[in-house]
Amino acid sequence: MDIGVCVTHDAGNMEEKILRMKAQGFRRCQLLTWNMALWTDEEAVRLRECFKAHDTEITAFWCGMEGPAERNFYD
Image (cartoon, rainbow, N blue to C red; front, side, top):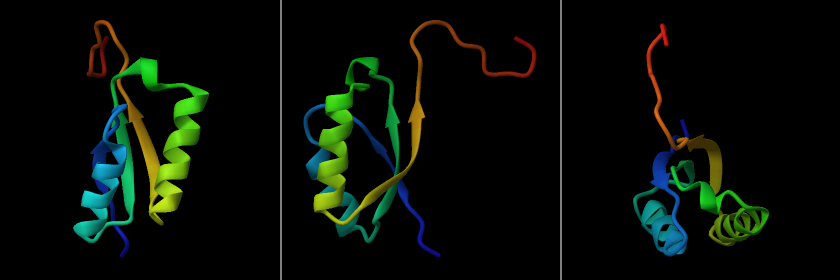
């Protein structure tokens, strides 16, 4: 089974994170981010190119929204 890891998205050191992920034997990841300022078309292109260059891929994207949040079945 080919499993992945969670990788936190930031503007600065994504290539370093991808290389660390590969060094640990993983090629796939779930990308995590809270920074809505990074949710741009330009950043998507940059990420796509960086992951492709290292023969890795993002298989899921988890995002957190700003402001109050209720994580239950009632609110």
